Image (cartoon, rainbow, N blue to C red; front, side):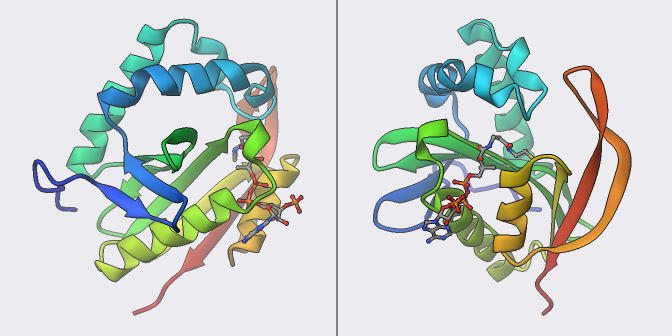
Amino acid sequence: MKASPVNTPDIIPVNDAISLRAVDEIFVAPLYQLTLKNKAWLQQTLNWPQFVNEEADTRQTVQGNVMLHQRGYAKMYLIFHHEALIGVLSFNLIEPLNKTAYIGYWLDEDAQGQGIVSRSLQALMQHYVERGELRRFVIKCRVDNASSNALAVRNGFSLEGCLKQAEYLNGAYDDQNIYARIFSE
Ligand SMILES: CC(C)(COP(=O)(O)OP(=O)(O)OC[C@H]1O[C@@H](n2cnc3c(N)ncnc32)[C@H](O)[C@@H]1OP(=O)(O)O)[C@@H](O)C(=O)NCCC(=O)NCCS
């Protein structure tokens, strides 16, 4: 996958209010604050929040993801509502040969229930499909994560199977549903 040209801001508009902005070090402070605000809640569904204890932890994550984003091995976008950072939508892994991306997302708890991640996801997939870079999108989520399973179904993903004890979270290895959506040429 080609890297974005230097100096071209990597911003994907979703609608008048929402946009996706490529991960960048200028967003470290607000991303850390958003993570702190949601830390206890996010820890119910994601393993990494427990390891975010100071701004340097977020900076390290951001720096790693800037490199992966620029090289096309992954893509991390921050979800903005006007100028407010409210969540993250990522391709955690990209397989360029297979034109496949593995999706991850989380939102400010207070911003749920408005279709913000769904609309962002549709815009993100469309962006990469139009460029011919990706065609298969995958969501893997714990069977118990009702909001995430509902999001996959709401966005036209099909359940392909259930991976047994595939995700470690808070002391247990939980079963994971795997969903995919394919855009054929
Ligand atoms: C998973 C998560 C992102 C889902 O957030 P969400 O706001 O429910 O997701 P969506 O953007 O699909 O919004 C759907 C909700 O908005 C409503 N909605 C309003 N307008 C909508 C629109 N135009 N399009 C879609 N849904 C809309 C839907 O009815 C639904 O509300 P409901 O759950 O009360 O029925 C959120 O719960 C989260 O961050 N969880 C913690 C982290 C996590 O689990 N990540 C995934 C790990 S696999």
